Image: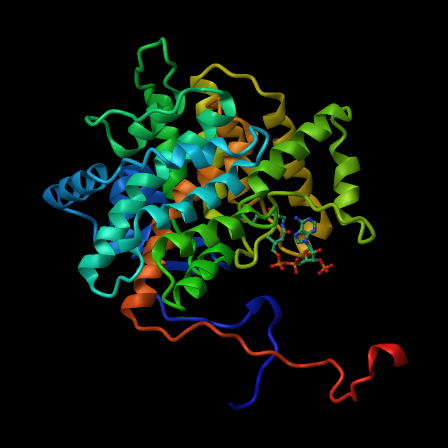
Amino acid sequence: GGVVTLDPGYKNTGACESAITFLDGEKGVLRYRGYSIEELAEKAHFLEVCYLLIFGELPTTPQLNKFHADIKAQSHVDEDVKKILDGFPKSAHPMGVLSSLTSALVAFNPSSVNVDSEEDMYKAIVKILGKFPVLTAWTYRKRMGLPLDYGGDSLGYVDNFIKMMFKKPSADYATNDIILEALDKLLILHADHEQNCSTSTVRIVGSSHAGLFISISAGIAALWGPLHGGANQAVIEMLEAIKEDGGDTKKFMAKAKDKNDPFRLMGFGHRVYKNFDPRAKIIKKAADAVLDDLGIDDEILDIAKALEKEALEDPYFVERKLYPNVDFYSGIIYRALGIPVEMFTPMFALGRLPGWIAQWREMRLNKEPIGRPRQIYVGKTHREFVPVEKR
Ligand code: CMC
């Protein structure tokens, strides 16, 4: 009951109380459980950050070891899942495949659905953390025509994922520290971002007490869109289009400003950041370092930098406080690491997984009510039915 306030896109509506991620959009501050994103990206590993987000504290070594062992014990996927993957055409977008496979996991793990106790939640959490990287790597390998495989038991969480992605049937696998560090950092930067579109989706689906896996499958679907996680793919496609067109960034800037043209500068703007996106700052630096380390000279990076410079000086972007966001430079790193463009958004999903889990767990532990927004009805009020022959 009561008065319904209209707020399309929930621009000013708080949907929950949360103790996971602090974000100050005016100052460009992002903290997970109180720890600054800059410090975590520099000093922590992704799995520690997963633990921190989900359980609220940085783990001790025994806690981290147990967590990792529990995840490893669950990091196999039923062989029949391969048959489902086989049914998709190679051309299928990996985000659709990943969302489908994640929902298929429910059928193979029915005990993960009705979880009320913290203990059952924990079991579901380590299962999805174990199986999701396998699904992501398999989605990639299927696309590339590579045999589906597992990584190695002795490897770290991210290292193991890289092995599952890139190991060739005939070649030994060796860790490349540059790739490992860059990827670990990227995953940390993507790990949570409070009530964004996909996370809100996970919370709202989960609020009906549907299980964790299916809520995450819905989150993956939400992340796919180009206004959200799909932007990382769209950025590279945009930069390539600019390059192909002769490199005239001004022409694309003009398109982005033209209100009759649906084109937007992908990787720019954010619902909450009205100063700068702190993640973009870190990623820009990392992109420079990775290209340098790997000895790659990417023309796309030059175009990105030119575009950023122009946008930051352009009154249209200045007035609207549009700054580069997390997706603007991340694709440049993924490219340098040899990850194909369609896999960029799945990489985002892998990074966001702990955030989705943490937010789902918090929602359940807080015993939040079912998510059910109201509306303001603007249709016809009452009409008399007219039989079909009289219409
Ligand atoms: N290029 C050109 N104009 C833009 C852009 C852009 N990228 N972003 C916003 N604007 C304009 C918009 O047209 C509007 O202008 P006006 O006031 O004249 O109507 C004004 O800026 C405010 O934009 P909005 O659409 O009301 O803002 P929003 O909070 O609803 O949308 C956004 C935020 C991120 C969806 C939007 O900025 C956008 O579409 N950006 C491009 C896609 C993108 O990079 N998404 C990734 C977001 S960050 C990570 C993630 O979520 O995955």
